[in-house]
Length: 130
Image (cartoon, rainbow, N blue to C red):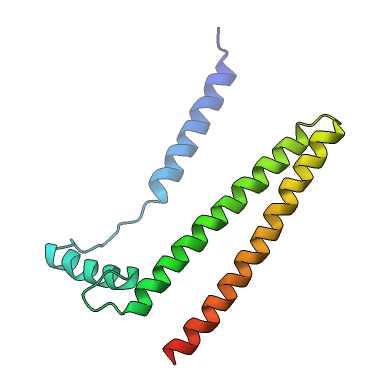
């Protein structure tokens, strides 16, 4: 059976929690969005994504390159995770450790190549826009 002291503690903690919730409440005065607001915002978002009405060829190419580099960055992360996991799971097996080290090393070399490609793309893109 629960003692009186425990019930008293539960009531005090419950009241404190409820007072914290209700005393920290503040009203929010937000405006109700309209359909016109949504249409206006989709144009801004579409233009930023490179799919709006007035999109230049350089914006489309830039968007494609950024997407490709993002995919390759994801591949780098997956390879690093795979190599690190295999290294931890090798349990001292020198052959598996060496294979894992080679995977991590290849992933790092790939990252350096991708960063170089990004730097070249940013440089050429800056020249073309000027």
